[in-house]
Length: 244
Image (cartoon, one colour):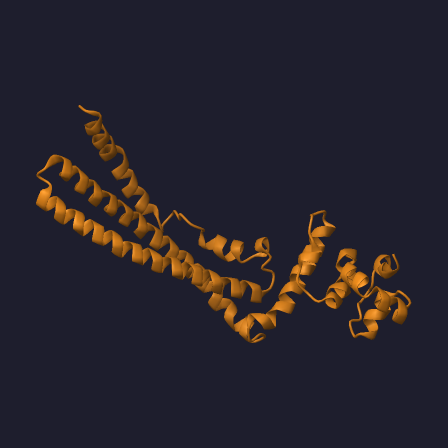
């Protein structure tokens, strides 16, 4: 038996049955992509700094778009594969009596059929994932729409939550960079004072140092109070950063 014949026999014996068995598991006890649980409680969670309902809602919308677009790409691929399969079968029927050409076109048809099966499995899995994100989107939609008109409306609250989240992580020894969190300097300083996070106060302390010294004798708490950003329970360790 030639190496070629051995390859055909071994592939037929070992791969076809296993592939069919795995395909039956998909969507029952197995997922190739993220599980529904991970979609809802991983991607839409604090692990990706999705702290607020608005953050989780808008991320779910983005994920729905991403997976929906991927499904359309898979559909386009399936159309191309079906064309290749049909053409290969036709050419094999016409010229397959010639061994070399027959092998070539049967191989082309087999490759297209295998890719088609893989594409179908991918589509089924992506459809499930899309459904999981859409479930979260629909559940969060009433809560978010009752408070915000758009993602821009929600962003101040979203990033304030992220800032507080990072401050809390700092306090348990995690390395976080508060200066990377979007927000105006006054709100960041206010939260920094309230939560005892000097890093969040630094931008205001440096940018407005002269004003703080002239208007409030270097006291950031008094300065913020004049501007209407009165912090609650200021930390005495960070009230005079402008002087340092």
